[in-house]
Length: 357
Image (cartoon, rainbow, N blue to C red):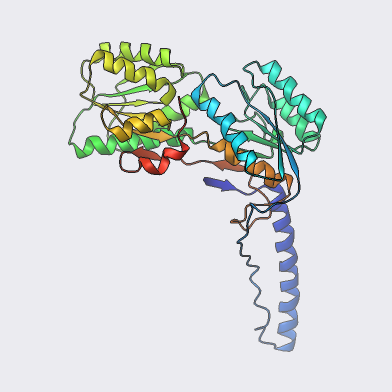
């Protein structure tokens, strides 16, 4: 994890503590000057060390969980990870609601969890903006909300947000492709990009990171198409891409689920002159990378294991605990997961986070 920011309640508590400490320190300093005391006994530095066990059994916590319907390998893995993580804790009662891709139905399901007065909510919204009001309703009712991946429109609607780094995915893919082409002394390379749904901010962030990372090598995207995160759409747009570009040096495909269709189109066209990088870190992609018998040579992670972490975070919030390896008393307000580059050399380290497309 990276980009960790302290929660507001924690910050207030620390500020009060430090201001109190400063006042005491000033009083002691004046007394020392008056008495010509050396002050050697007043060297408090307000340091705090940590080292605990967050897994130890604590207060019983009921965690409500809501996510879209599993019509996509990544979404399916989100629900499975959340349930599996909840089962590892004796002190957690896991209360999921029926997954749905209907915004109104998800709002109704969350309202049911609010009525039941669960201790904490974990929500992956179908649409962050449209689910903001009901999440705010939960927060106003005293139920902390852990916002998973698709962010709500207002920070007042969640206690903690956890998700992947879309911009970072593009950066990781861009650096892998740029470095490999530079190493091969490739000049004026043809670099293709197969994006997901173009209207989504996450797709725009991925493309921006990719463009900016390639730019550090003096390269640019020469051919770009957008699919819809589905196998069928991936196959269709890739077929069009391959027909339009008779020679390609490298491709970045944003999503490993749609990547099944991308690879099918590449096999169908019998194209092998380029290498490809995937996105998200599916088990299918990692198996292909490990086998090293296709154009797919790497993928950049956006792991659904974030759902497991969301459950752990919700439990700690419900038990009014912080992370045992951080000095702050409370769980952070924002957690952005790093996007790693998985290659043949390190794939075994990441296989346990892969999901089946």
